[in-house]
Length: 441
Image (cartoon, rainbow, N blue to C red; front, side, top):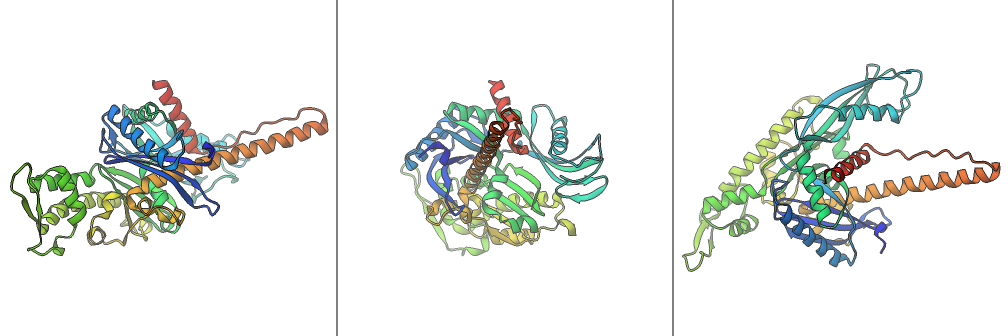
């Protein structure tokens, strides 16, 4: 199959690295052609801290996906997360030289580019500038100002900021693994693509993606992203607590959490005991499930409370900003037993577990439809979307050229006017980032 027919999403997580190869079928659903998964070594809390180990983990996942699909991977779309990500709200405006002309794409571009010039802390760079709503000559709550008349164009922006070094390190890992960097997306946005419906985004929803090293939060309201945040705790901290609390090794702690762990201590009876083999001829250890769930409960409550503080910071308690669709939990950590009930109990908001299966073709592997793969599926969707947009633009360009060639033949002279296709803000940012990474080497 030609490279043009499929795309690849690569999720570089703290506990695992996942590569997914897929294409869109005739029904607009995603057909998974191959997946590869490897243990993530060299990533801590979403940030690369050992380049060599990360490169070999990426290569392992990619090779596995290539063998599974029988295809060669060229370019990938990668997610970025980590505790260095922060977001802020910013308002900016431009005064248009001629208010008798309608507002066009160039005006919106000028306004966005102005936000990119914001002075950040040393070592930080703006990753996304996401316009929320516009104001034209004081008229509020305009979603699409193109085509309107006005002298002063104003907008509120959601600005996502990250550390330059972390972004460069991811770029370096991808290049050294022999791959091309197709695009970089904020991971909470990718997960949201995969598990949220448009109705939920309109009504207002908080997506909580509990990964191994971090918990990502993305809040949507009226179909627009309103708040993003990365909390530097995830499933690994729970495993660490079990390891310390029960004096066992990490591998056993992880298995205990997955098999017997529960976020609700009241569920377990006092006499439920699990026996763990001792190390090298030592006596086996007996652990009560009640104690196990008490350890898990304490840490999970801490994580949820931190997320809830972020939801309150966004302003969920104001009537106008209320998140009617409540909370959607996804990521590997969302599979913990009774977590949904605990989240509902702490926040008082409706909660469901988010599975990425509604975008997948019916015959997809059950494993890929698990919340564990939400980010990777979201990145694959982003890759396919970018590819479709680029194909469309090329098609339009070709058609225009054909029309112009036709006119040339008729008129016998050249009347060629090249109209470049419009790029989305995100594509522009990706190009900037690619230049930035190339220059950095």
